[in-house]
Image: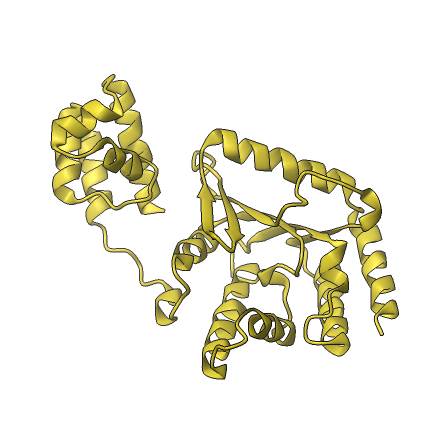
Length: 277
């Protein structure tokens, strides 16, 4: 989050100074791709680079002090540093921990924050069939710990999830495990006020997200841009450009409009629960 804020402030300063990305890079002896990555929050800015950019942009004294103080501030120790996370996943966990709202579309399986422990274990085992059990249990502990954002004191995360019907029927871990997962979902939908669950039935036909699940992260600061996270076999994608976030924002709104309302979704899940053999 700090990296994103510094990058955004530097981008604003560069635009105010009417320098292009290429000119900013030339001014401090860096490539235009480096400047772009700094501004997009994809790369830490070194202190020598920060000072040089602030000089090149002729930044006001107050702004210089604020950014230099932000850069030098020691970050709080994050709980996930105790875990051996999959590549690049620490970025997502950090963003999730900072988010105020998650808007989710889940397609093939139930979203991580909504999984029961046995369902999560079975899903991890199915996705990593050759992994040692110790590794599976370590990942399980991580995923279970992440769910604490839903019950944290003060401002628990607001989760707005659209679940495709496929995620309700797929018998992860077998029928008993799937039935327990459905009971878990029903309990969350009925008892947790900061969780909004809607089911998108097969009968609704084609829609804009048939090609995969996604998560939109919104932050407490209204000036902090949303981030769209897409997990795929080819790698994790973090989309921040307004054109991309607006496209997914519209997609999620359409999905919610197509999905059953909250009460009907609970009734639908109870019907599926009865029919799983």
